[in-house]
Structure formats: C-alpha cells, structure tokens
Length: 81
Length: 324
Image (tube, chains in turn purple, red):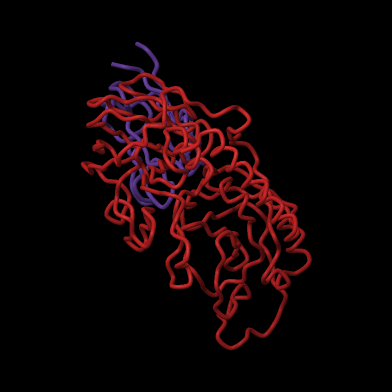
C-alpha cells in the first residue's frame, strides 16, 4: 500500500461539493477509482473537477471546503488499492 | 497543423493586440503579458507581434502534425514533449506526431507558446488576437476547444534550436507584487482615510480574475466623499456619470473590491476610477495567480512615462538579440 497525494494543478478556491446544498463528493475512508471526482476548483468563473488520479481508498483531506489553494498543493491523500 | 487534444483552462490565440478600436467598444485584447509573448516569438525567429497561444493556469495538450520550432515564455509551466521536460525561455523542436503538454504553474499565470511561422488565423481589424466576449478574432472568436486544428504559418527560418533568453532578460515571477498607479481621474472622490488604506494595505487576487479584469480582495472597504449623486450617476457612492475606462484603470464597486481592467475590458461605464496601473506594470498583473498578493504604490505621470521608456528599452533588447 503506497500513499498517493492528490494535487491540484490549478489555483483558486477548493470545494468538496457541487453546490452549497449538495452532499460532499466523497468522504475520507471511501473507495475511489482514478476518475472519481473528489472536489471542484473554482477559478476564473469556471469550476474544474478534481479527480483522484489513481484508484484506492481516500485517506484524508488536507484542505477544507472553501479554502484557497495554489497550484501543486496537496488536496487529499489516498492509499492505492 | 496543431491539433488540440485538451484545451486547458482558457487557452487563446493572442498577438500584441488590436489597437485603435476601443472608442468603438472593441478592446485591444492581445497577450496580457506582452513581454513574454514578444520574447517567445523572437526565440523562434518570428516578428514580436506574431500570434501565439496564451495558456492560462492549466495548459493545453497539443498534438503536432508537422515538425515545428517552438518556445515557451512567461509563467513557469514546464513544457513536456512526449513526457520529457523541456526548458522554458528556450527554443526547442517538436516533431510531427509528438504531443506537447504543460506542467502546473510553479510561478506566474500565463505561459506563451510561440510556434515558428505563428498561428495562422485570419487577421480581424488588423490583429489575430482573440476577444472572446465579442466572439472576434483568434480561432473562431473563442478559446480553444477539444479537436481544434490550428494552422501554422510559414517559418522565417531565422529561429534555431537552443536559442535562449539571457538570464537578465528573464522575468522573475511570484511573491508579493508592487503595482505602480497614477491616481485619478476620480481619486478625489475617496475620503482621505480610504486613499491612505488603499495604498497602505496588501490586496489579494480573487479567483475571478481574468482577461477582462483582475479583482482584488482583503483590504479595508473604501469610503467615498459624501455628495448628492449627479443626474445620470447611479445611487451608490462609487458610481459616476458614465465615463471611458482606460486599460489598467481601477474601479471599486460599492467601495469593496478594487478591479483593475485589463486588455479585454469594456470601454466605459459608471464606476469611479481611483487610479490607473501604469502600462509598464500591466504584464505583471497578467502573471498574477489567484490568492497572490499585491500592493499599489502611487507614482506621478512623469515616473509612469519613465517606466514606460525603460520597459520599451527592454523590449528593444529582445529584438536586438534576436533580429527577425
């Protein structure tokens, strides 16, 4: 089991859910596949989906919903399957 | 041809811009970092004004269908050819069939990809720049989309692999940026306290910042001198009777978040402009990432003109080094 960081290539604002009233895309502990959306980055009036990148179990989020993020920042860590 | 496999966040064709139509409501557009565009072009033997790709924050993925000499200047978004890192600020070759990608920006916001021969889209009102809001110029008047095939012009043959910008002519990006401002035309509408705090405090680029305007947050609200609003002006104290907006002008709707207009801005409106960022510093704004910090400092018109002369000298250095 290796740990993988999920990094954002974009700066902006990180959201864990699609709308303020939606449930979170995923919770820590969930099994994810490479293309599972784990959050959104809002920048330049556009929302870009952030995917897990590799399959595994989502270990922890290192950034809170609504936090500013910068390119290359680790958003979450996951244990590969 | 260059085929767009992935368009990136906001990639568009830009040259140095479309001057002379702002009075008709058509802004200059063109590269937000004019220096980086000029440098990338000249590294591949193009005239400084050739059309290139402005790659914002998240770069595109491009499949070359012909051999090409290219260079990337501006934001530190490392180009990769079939997965191999290439140098920034240096001309390199991409062979037909190879794929060019970009790493995330380590500093800066906009990388300029110049291709020898230029991106050969039609001239519209004298420029190949994209004005997306007006669906004008560039590639079909819009940002690049998946599947687009970009025509490349005929290379001058003057570019060569390995041509590189000397360190002294490279930009340093990132950190807190100082933006020089000539106060006016409505600076006197601010209260003295607001005029002080605007220049004293650090401001943070908002995530909405784009080619139209850069919004800054995090400073104290700015109050305006009380007055009875004149006929034709909106009711908010930040409103004026409609006026022309210079590129670089700073408006503060409701006194809350200053917006610096950039090269795709609307040409006029009803917000008081408290100052204008000088032309020599507009490139710096184009390289600011969301959440990056800036301070504004006041300069005189003479200082602004002196800065413009220095900036033009730096541009002239490029064309002396790389005659096209």
